[in-house]
Image (tube, rainbow, N blue to C red; front, side):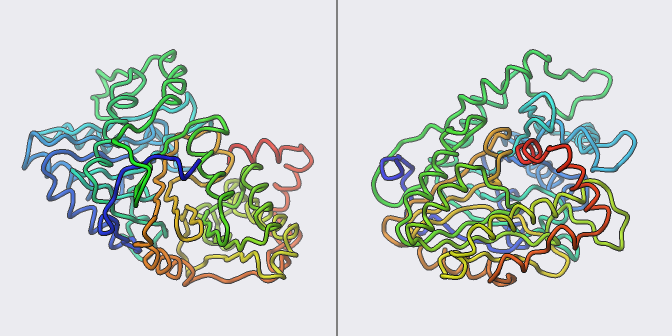
Length: 437
């Protein structure tokens, strides 16, 4: 499938790597400042914090300099309408948007996309910063930690692709399937005249989104990029590409995911490749590098059990594949760097095909969220060294597992965590939780 999959032709110098959150932020701000025709941003959220306000102001300044500039920011509707977990009172990032646009001479579009009628049922996990003829692709959203505004950062991947055809295709998909849909609402409307999508439009929106696709002038030869999108159905194009990418490996797989909870189909094909003698490297965040991790010295809440649940999923997988660890076929790396967090996603196959994506490669991404990704075909080997260098950069703050017992067992966890996880087991809720986390 992958060799027959068409894509957009790319020259060797069209792709570049940013590697760090500082470079990501600086590059994004520079491109916003120099935009001539359009700025389209798709992210889970644009936070009401220093970095979020800085990016929002940069967008407004760009519009003020050039009133004809087409500026659209897409964020998840439900995420924007609530505060942070545990935050009380009327809050949410939309309050920032409403205030900023009310004061702006030249407003911009900030759109809330309700992928499903409830946040836990699915969110906008679409990624891409599309500015004129350039696409900056990252799994990062817009806030202090993703942009290392202070002393902490959330590690992600950051690539820049200069391609007018790719930028046109990604903009076109947003225009055709999202921004003009009746379910999508402007998050900048005054409170007293606000109009939101009808319930029936929102309920049926997922059906329309499931038909979304990228349209472009296609080639099946040479270096190229294939934009992919998927919502629901295990066999959507993005999910199928992930399975086929892993299954096509003849030498080596390099897989990044922040939360280890692979769908059954992905776990099955990874196991198959190990049995075939294919080397597999998996880089996953240590539980302390999970964005939901709560240090023991702080007050515990239920959400803090999530990193431990992911660790147990990884421990079970490592135990089953201990034979592959011992033979050197499977290398599991735990990423941990001081008090920072880990958010990398993607797959490299034989250092020839590379999927960069916002998908967490888990059941939720597989079935509930709107996801996308860019599959890069390196037919000429032009990018081989850069991807190798990126992988070395990723591994810089990792520890390799040599035995599954290096991962903590349930009995070593803090008492509140043990209590929650034992309750989940008694209720036999593991299966359901794994599908929505």
